[in-house]
Amino acid sequence: MSSLLITLCLISVWLACAKVVDEFGPDCAEFFYNGKEPDLLDLNKPNPERFRKICQQYQNRFHFATLYDTVRRTPVYSAYRWRPKSQRVTTGEPHHCRSDVWMYEPKLTYPKGNADEMQEDRKLFDTQAMDDDYKDSTRGYTRGHLNPNSHQWDGFSQCSTFTMTNIVPQHKKSNSPPWSDHENKILKRLEQYCKSDAYIVTGVMPYINDKWINPDCSNPHGTTGRPEAPSSGLCGS
View 1: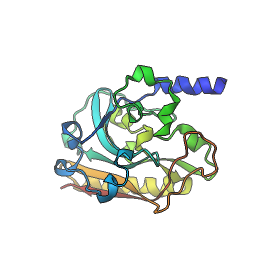
View 2: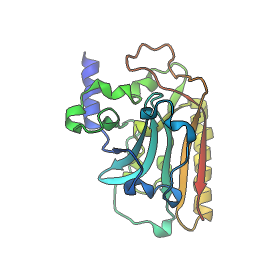
View 3: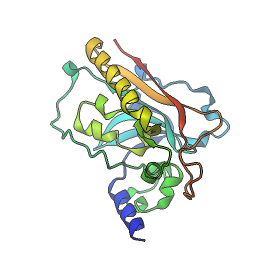
View 4: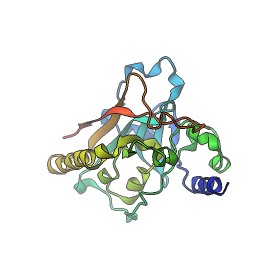
């Protein structure tokens, strides 16, 4: 019972405040090249309700956009904008985020609910992964950012990436260093060649037949789908 109470207390503190929307409107269009989201043909069938569009909000600002799969309990992609140093606005925000604290998105479960009323509801995890999915993984899966905090230039934007709706399972041998090296190479190329905003979409390709990080677990909320491979695409000049 004590462990359950501790978990609930953590959840009550670290709820995200994103917007779950029907369409990526003005709040999120700025994170896509020319304001147009990727055209993914098969997402409206056979179960269109499983995919949710999230405008990721933190400290009253929108920071990136995510398309989320509530069945696999992982994001399909996260889209964000990188800005060259000459065009950044310095806000004086703190640049330290606790990497051991992960936020959850209550509106995936209750789109019209009040966050204060939802903070201790275990149904939150019917639609999104929970930290225990990774802590209980016996197969070496870790949390992998789609929008990496290292590609963000201010403190609030960095902290906004630490949400479970921006995380996919990556095997620890793939997450660091291979994938982190890939993120660093992209960042160096952006800094070297891009003179204006660049738009990045990082997503995952699922297995044709779903595979899970804890296939034998007894978690009543289900388990979390693991992708076959991650991928990134960017547009900039």
